[in-house]
Length: 201
Image (cartoon, rainbow, N blue to C red):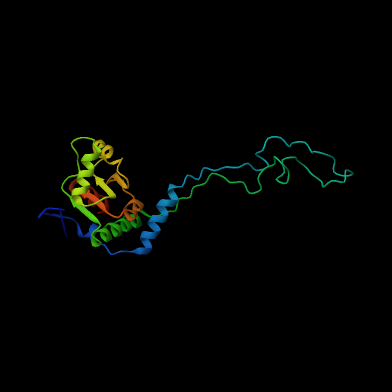
């Protein structure tokens, strides 16, 4: 298939397999949930009664005190005791096959094209890392917010864009499903489009 280049009569030819896939909402949802789950740190931790320091000696004798029997001062019932169901570091990641991931990414990119949310440009480089240069480029495209995909992370483009609200710059080789579906527009230059095609094929 051919995709038109913005503000140009030229078109760029891309693979039908990568950019003409049917939209699979269930798979895309699974893909986004899997990515968000894997992004969770899962580093919280609390102490059980065995982790809390002390409590080795029985606090008082078993009978004759009139109090409830106790074997340790680190029981969860006591102040400064352990936690009953203590949190532990855990991995929230959900398994997703590589084939499913690639198919889901094709589905997302293909739907972006059908909704005219994927804009192909000749070049997104800037001469200097100046915000006004990037702002001028975005004004020419008629876009105020979105995601810019580049072939490799150009420091000048990144520095020029980081002070513009709601504008992200990302390398096409590491773009994730959440970034694609959450942005109103995705701007990609020709070099990045070829890299994205290689990744999806």
